[in-house]
Length: 162
View (cartoon, rainbow, N blue to C red):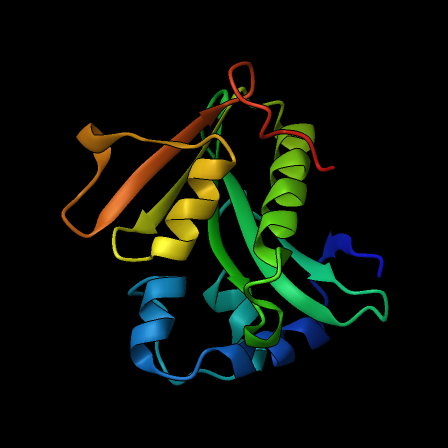
């Protein structure tokens, strides 16, 4: 099956909204400023980040199976956020594919040399994935709940979308 990273379409938000089932998962995915419940129609505005870009991973039938964003945090550094995979597509490498494609797109669009992201300390699957992609924990910028992770374009093979 072919997968494409493409700009998020209005209908994708309808799909993404079904993946968030409760206030806790909403806060962990989107942050404390996104209320739950929300309507799919509200998501583009609720998820808006100044200077940010939103992308969806679409399966061969153009069905949205993943979502993620990136934004420049400072010159030379781009931050990934709000990465989510359809519950039906988890555990089979879809998250890895989304991350690799999103990272490649972020580097292409921003020319950043460093990519960062945050992950909950107790999110073992995501932590394992990001570590395997070359991200390292920056403990000095982490909290008791959230880890800041960073990967360098020059140091890691993380920038390839293969």
